[in-house]
Image 1 (cartoon, rainbow, N blue to C red):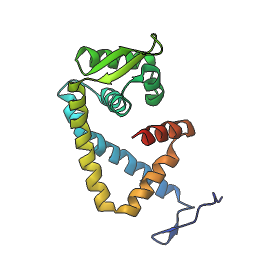
Image 2 (cartoon, rainbow, N blue to C red):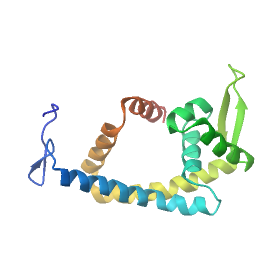
Image 3 (cartoon, rainbow, N blue to C red):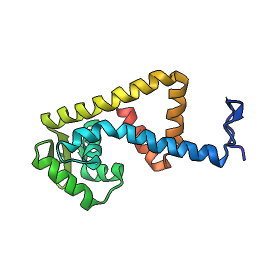
Image 4 (cartoon, helix red, strand yellow):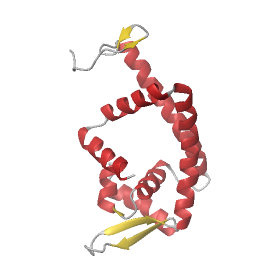
Length: 169
C-alpha cells in the first residue's frame, strides 16, 4: 500500500505504515491541539459574546478584503442562514462593512472596519504567539512536515482554495 513517498523514519518506524493506535494518538493530539489553538481567541470572543464562527468570518475577511458572501460561504462551508446571522451581528457591531460590488451590483463585498481589523489583530496575535512557540520548540523540519500533513488532510477543493488564499498573501 505504497503511495510513492519515501518512508522516512520516525523512531525507527516507517511513516508509510501506522498502526490504528498511532493514528488514534494523532487524532487525539489534533483535538487537544485545536483546543489549545482556539483557547486564547475564545476568551477574547467570549467577552464580546461572539463565537468561533465570528472569528472565522473575521479571519477570512481580513485575508481577502472585498471577498464576496458567496466566496466566504465556500471557504467556511456553512449554510447561508448561519453566515448571514454572523455577518448581521458583525455589521451591526461595526466590525464589518458590506459594500455593493463594483462589477456586479448584486454582489456584496465584505471589508473589516478599523474596529474589525483591531479585533482581528488581537485574535491573530494570540494564535501567532502560540504557533510561534510551538514551531520554535518543534524545529523547522517538524514545521514543514506539519504543514504537509495538514495540506494532505484537506479535500482537494479546499486545498485549492487554501493555496489560492496562501498565494495571495
